[in-house]
Length: 70
Image 1 (spheres, one colour):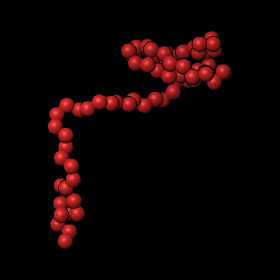
Image 2 (cartoon, rainbow, N blue to C red):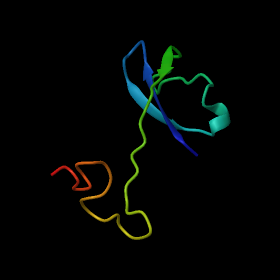
Image 3 (cartoon, helix red, strand yellow):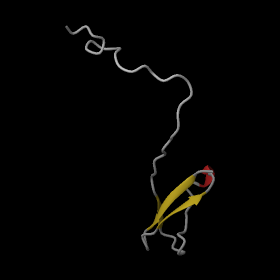
Image 4 (tube, rainbow, N blue to C red):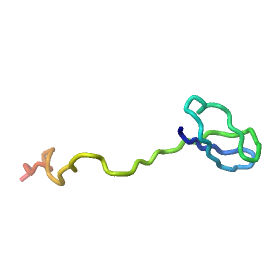
C-alpha cells in the first residue's frame, strides 16, 4: 500500500497515512482531529543497482563525441 503525505491547514502539522490507492482522494483528518487537510505532492526515490551490464564510459554519438571534429 502506498503512503500519502498530508498537511493540516489548522495546526500546520504534516503527517502520513498508509492507504490503498482507491482511497488516495478520500479526506484525511490530522492526528489532532482537524479535518481541514491537504494532500501533499511527494517524490519517489528509487535506489539500488539495475540488473545487467553497466553502460560503457565516454565516447559515442554526435560529431564531437565521436571524434570527427578535428
